[in-house]
Image 1 (cartoon, helix red, strand yellow):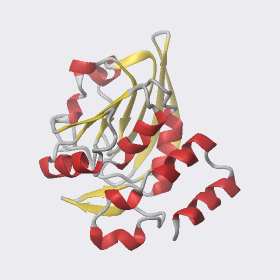
Image 2 (image 1 turned 45 degrees about the vertical axis):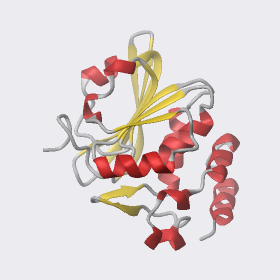
Image 3 (image 1 turned 90 degrees about the vertical axis):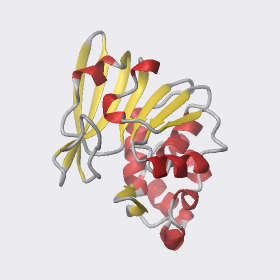
Length: 207
């Protein structure tokens, strides 16, 4: 599938707002995948990026990105950098903000850093993201791009009020995508459907 085909499909279905389509158009997904899979860069499927990790399928990335509602100056924490693709999109959507993205696998963190060199407002951290990143909290937005067993209270404490958090919550096989909106000390939860992500590693990940 070609990039334009995927964009036209989304546009015809009226699935995503124009600013998200424009961000997808600008970021070269082929730069965030392994050479063996270059021909599949714009198939709407997840692809392996090594170390038993994947880059999520484009439509899933777009759903999460739009639901996160990044603003021009948002300070965002992404947990699970992978190859850096999600962070690249967020960088374009929050050009005056700052993207902190955590990756526990050192080789992937290095891969992401090389992929994200031109995205100056992105900082890749080779740390255990299951703990969040208290040093830079609070964040306007927090996004988990891996499956998590539950949302820990200390993660919610790292979310600004008002703020939005997106996470796939469940077991290692299937998860519910949950959007949490924090406003006036209240938490509102929305279910966005079922997905399948690789499991979160680290202290508060899956055992």
